[in-house]
Length: 93
Image (cartoon, rainbow, N blue to C red; front, side, top):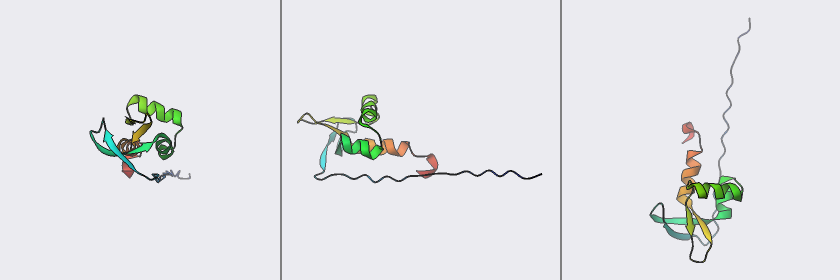
């Protein structure tokens, strides 16, 4: 009788977060500290999601939204990195 072998394949991906210059630093109302504010397109690209999915994360409070005086919406980079860290397997943190 042949022995059965189990093979477990673990796939990991690294993402590089590219921030366009100039870097805008503002105070995040949730983190209560100065953070780098990303545009929504930069944040969506960093997470690898569509704008609609990013909007859902912002609405749920998983990722922090920063409303700029100019009327534009920015995303707290620290909350984005925390969200990305939580989505990684525990063995890779």
